[in-house]
Amino acid sequence: MNQKMPAKEYRQKIEKVCNYVLHHPDSDLSLEALSEMVNYSPFHFQKIFKQVTGETPKQYVIKMRLETAAHYLIIHR
Image 1 (cartoon, rainbow, N blue to C red):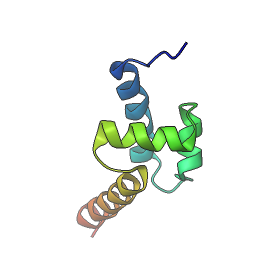
Image 2: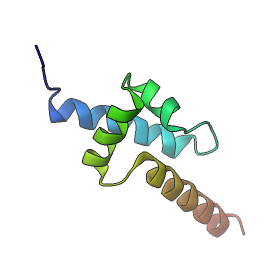
Image 3: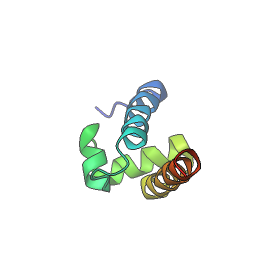
């Protein structure tokens, strides 16, 4: 049997990862580490992540790290 996970569950798992990335920008955010958080293979995780967010996990991590750094520079001159 090949069951598809509902889109709602995919979004919930990806949101969990996105929240983690946002709150832990200096931790290990490798594809393997992030995919382990939601119990997906790295290949499957990357595919689902891109479908849900429109960008790859690496692009998202880089964007969040840059935004966090910019925010820090603005707030803590």
